[in-house]
Image (tube, rainbow, N blue to C red; front, side, top):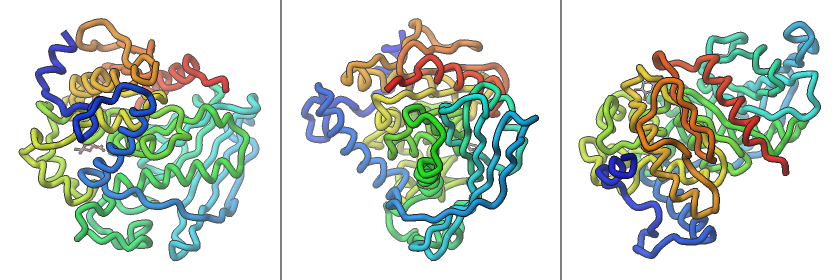
Length: 360
Ligand code: GTR
C-alpha cells in the first residue's frame, strides 16, 4: 500500500547517480550524497556558508536554575572575520548527569521559559540544550543586509546564493562548534531540532554537519520533510509567494512546475543517512501535510538500507494519531492537534534518543 502510493508520486531516483548508474553500496551512497548536496545547494537552499572562527564571552550564568537542578548560561559568540557579527547562545545543563545528550535547539524566541521550550522538563529528563533565536542570525524577511547575511554580503542576483534557511542552519553548526569548546555533554548523542520553518532548517543543518547524530524535524512541511509532488496544503508556488527569501532564487523556477524538480524532499533526508531522523506531524496541520511527511520517510528508507540500517519501520498503512514508528533509524510520529511544538513532541524526541542512544 505504501509502496504503491510512492510509485504514484513518480519521484526522482535516490538510488541512481545523475549519470544513471546504480547506487548499490555504502561507498557509492556516500558519493551520491555529495552529488545530492550539490544539487540541493544549487536548486533550493543555496550555498551553505563556510565555517568561521569565533570567540566567545560569558554574559551571565545561573548556577541554581530551576530549583538548583541545572546550570543556565548566556554567551555571545563573535566572528571577527565576519565583520564582528555576533549572536547569543544559551546553554542549559542538568546537574544530576555528567555527560547528558544534547539538543541544539533553534527557537523563534530567546526567552525562557518559552511555550516551545519546556526547559525544566528537558533537564529533569537528563538532557542538555544549547539554543539560539533564529532572528539573532538574520531577520526573517527579504532584507539580506543584516546579521550574518549582511556580513557575508549575500548577493541575491546569484541563482545559488544562500537563502535564510541555509544561514540559520549554519548557525546551528557554529553553535555546536562552540559547545564543543565548553564540553560537558555526550558528543556521540547530539540532536539538532526545530519546528516549522526551523524544522526545515534542522534538516538542512543535519545534512551539512555529520556531528548531529540525531535530526528532529517538527511539522516542517513544504521544502522540509514533506514530499513536494502531489502535496496537499502549501506548494512551491505558495511558499515562494510568501517566503522566497528562505531559498536560493533558483527554487522559483519550480513554482507550479514541481514535476520538473530533479529532486524531492527525500533527497534532503538522505543527506543525514545513516544517522537518525525523526519527522513529526500534527494531525490537523494540513498546510504541512502529514501524509506527505510520512511518505517522505518511507521514500528515503531504501537509501538507509544501502548503509545496512533500517529506515522507517511501520505497518503497511497511513499513520494515525498516536503512532510513533521508532523501530528503525528513520522515525515518524503523529500527534493530535494543530501546528505547534508541544511538550508531547519533546517527550517523543527524548524517547527516541533514549532508545537509539549511540554507545560509541
Ligand atoms: C508558514 C509556512 C510554513 C511553515 C510555517 C512556520 O506560514 O507557510 O512553511 O514553515 O509558516 O514556520 O511557522
